[in-house]
Image (cartoon, rainbow, N blue to C red; front, side, top):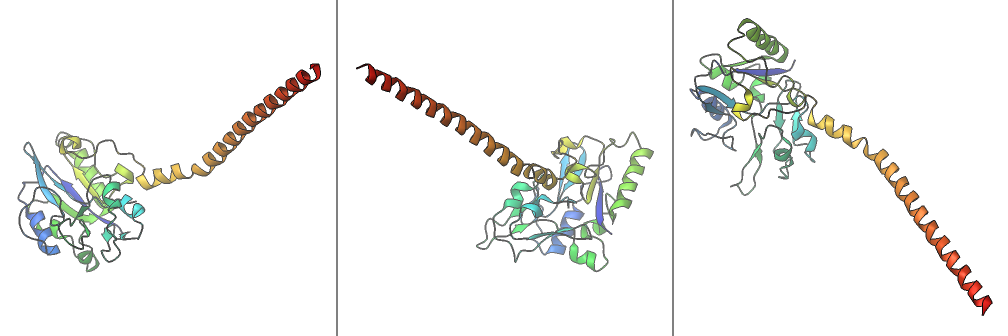
Length: 252
């Protein structure tokens, strides 16, 4: 069953415990960072008096996977979108395709790789929860089954209508994700993409690509027809010109 995270920004106190636990679990330098980087797979940010996290959303149908030409990304049955560094060729298409601007790059290394949260995949396989959820002292980050987390999020909104806006971020964005956010303020104020389609981006891309053959056939037929008409008119014009020239010669 797919797992995920429910991040309730109304419970977050900005303690950075999740970010530090993530660094420790992934063997990353311990310095606190403000933006996602090759050494920070999650960060805690602040907007007014509200704290929120940034991390990979682990899309149901990930764009990073769909654009990768070598299969360096994989969507697992546990819900995590993981990265196979040994396959990566450094094209960075994933960075351009991600609707949430998550993947980062090891710009300073001679053999750089892409880096991002992989939902503590090795821990999941051992039956453990993610390091960030385990370290959270207030329950702002909850780990569990994806559908159960969605049910819990809906319950909190229903039981506390004045505490939350009626929106579970990640439930439908870009085809849905395995990471959900609850908030008391609009997510656009956090800089989260606000106008993402409910269909996944790979699905929308495929829908467009499927039309290409018919467009090519129609376009080819149209161009051929146009060429035939123009060519026919030129032939007629040449024929009439020869006729006029022939009559002129006869009169002489």
